[in-house]
Image 1 (spheres, one colour):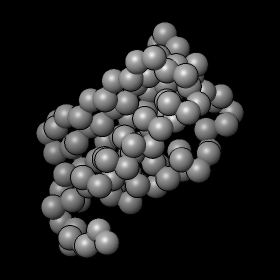
Image 2 (tube, rainbow, N blue to C red):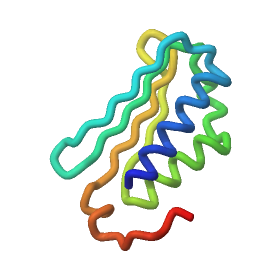
Image 3 (cartoon, rainbow, N blue to C red):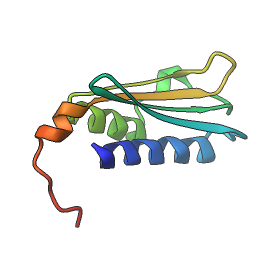
Image 4 (cartoon, rainbow, N blue to C red):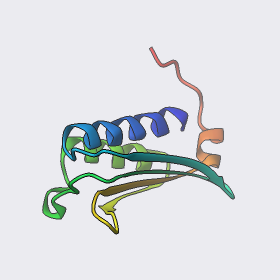
Length: 101
């Protein structure tokens, strides 16, 4: 689960830098009940809602879903983009640790 959170945040930050021309990015990670909530918000140029299936977005969604989590990407209220992932803590605790090599 830790690796999934890191990679989702990494991809969202990369997208904000490369594609959105964002000046500010906020990353929030919190535990709520039995879930980890990850949110990355930027003030960039937003995204084309018709083109939300790029490889980076697909990979982020797959990482969350593999752990039984949810993933969303949406336009921010004042422009920009909001990426959210909600991952169950129990899935991470039940899984067998594998080497990262």
